[in-house]
Length: 124
Image (cartoon, rainbow, N blue to C red; front, top):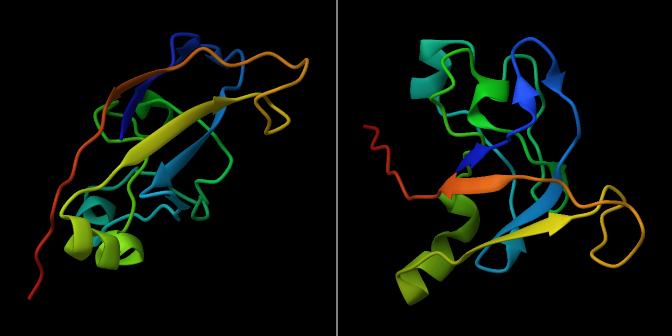
């Protein structure tokens, strides 16, 4: 999943945090770093896996020096049964307030979902 965060810059970082949830087939999932990406280096170095129920929405540039890596990568093993059953993945991205709600007084973040997609990595 590739995200654009207009208020992020290399010089200043993220001036305002954007919060949200990302559900795949109605369920929160955990981010991964595939081995092929670990070998390239620099991707989410030193970060623990994230649960997508409530997280800060980061842009590609925030998580890798190239700015070309997807901000969030998820394992399909967590939703494999649903994919086999339906043949598709429904991705639901919800812009949330910093307190994790939709209703309230805290502001929503300003973020754009650039694109999402399914990539399969085959291993022997």
